[in-house]
Length: 268
Image 1 (cartoon, helix red, strand yellow):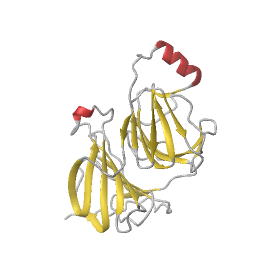
Image 2: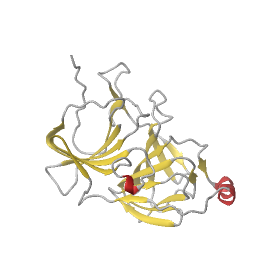
Image 3: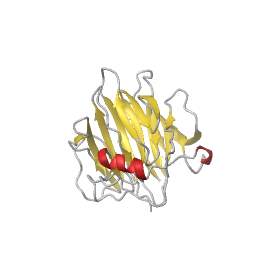
Image 4: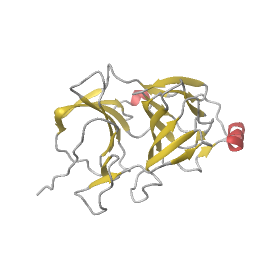
């Protein structure tokens, strides 16, 4: 199990910090636990199993239509993971050109702006706080709509992104003509709160977790992923109970508001 927590301080609440958590469930996954912030990285030596990862400057993508800052993937070759994760920025009016990720599903969590996301013949409008899951191989594009602000989203691709799985231009045309199965796949949209509906877990003091997407616990939804997505609420001073994830780890991505303390006690 992997966990990616997005900590938010919503304007409609002065007394609550909210964590949006993506919980990746797979017996094949294992990465170092960590807190992703803008602070300098600590020395590489073991710090009780905790690893701090910071985003780099990133690079332009899709011929200047957007910008990508990677966190998990080619930027962290020493961290084994079967997905890649990064932050994408697309200025208003720009868009990713039509393309396919063959064999890889894509998870998009909007942290700012508004997007129109195409998935085969279906186009959905997505706003801040919403999640969209795109099945592997679909014809897709993401457009930043409106005049301002820019579109920002966290992007998770599983298996990890590589240039070999992305088809566009002439390769896309050839693939569509010769290999495409002709089926139109529909994107899965998970709306923001209120209300959050899911399987509730009381995991500590003033902290609740709500499973929103889980292919094991929710087989009827046919999620094209092998991880789960959850939403957590944490009151100031709250904390999760001590726990141990067998064969897995926890990764925390802090977006804004407050400070998170992550530590691993040494059991006797």
